[in-house]
Length: 137
Ligand code: FES
Image 1: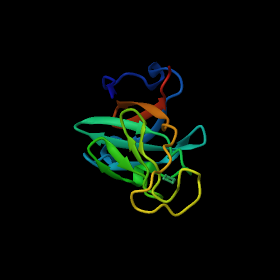
Image 2: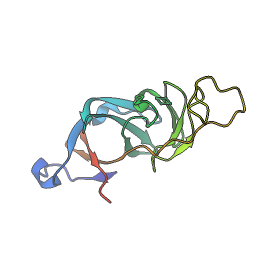
Image 3: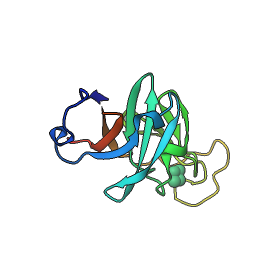
């Protein structure tokens, strides 16, 4: 997270920033699913060790990662249990309900597909609000 000094005009933040939450909405060690979208996708926020991370929706079927269980820097999608690194967006484990060929119903221990990484969002805190935008390369 990049902190912006209090009182700095929102306009000074640059283009593409969207107000996604109030700072008080975030709880250390938990996810938060914003009620606004970015480019038609959901916004998930995570507060881990005082740092705010942002991700888009799950790359499997668009699950709301902000509603998933957070363990350290890893979030589990609430829909089919794919795991993502909230720092990098990397998929650590594919959805437990899908086989590599995309069919449903993987058995325990069966290899699951590895998904594309989630969209990583830049985050900023300004005057009690959390803003996000797509990370620029
Ligand atoms: S939608 Fe996230 S694992 Fe299926």
